[in-house]
Image (cartoon, rainbow, N blue to C red; front, side, top):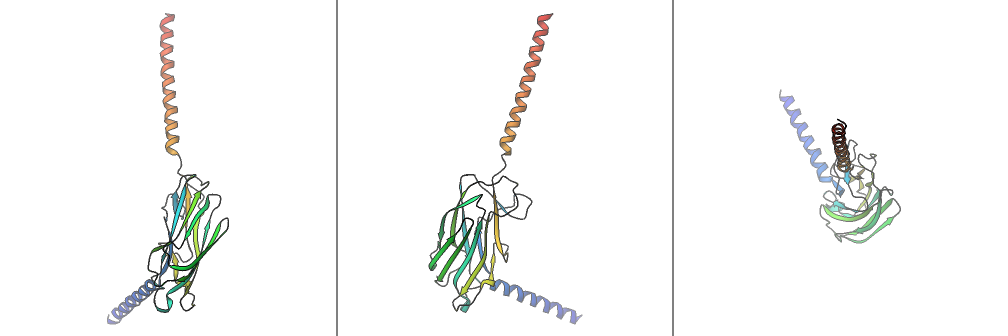
Length: 222
């Protein structure tokens, strides 16, 4: 019995050590709004208006890397989007002015965002960049289940030149590879419902009118 209790105590302590170690090492890159689940596919969704704009704030949490030699110096990540639905309009890098030099290399559906020379300490959960898109031609819900906006591939360097990229995760669920979202226009069900109601109402009206005319004709022919 004592052996079982000791094994249980050791297992609990070891699990607590692992959890505390992971928390201490966690660094995170995410974007807001993250979206919500609007259909059955695994990607979260954002309802948008065709012809409008959509702004994503990229949020950096350096909790696990702003310690000693691991203090963050440079960071680079990749943004991808579906150019048939979104068009990059206005990228604003280093919103919080935490880096001495930064840059962004863009293509039709991809951008590499670079930040170098971090002023330490950076702090946690601050807006790193703001990316504003024009909403071009989003699909209607339910959509195709493919991402329309994604961040991925962090390259992070600490103050001594060490690569700390492996300490980063993405999004609130700490995905090790990426965070992504899908944009879609709400199905105009309310408009369709209104049209259907109007059609039914018109049909009922003409049926009543037809019965009334039939009765009047019957009275005349008597």
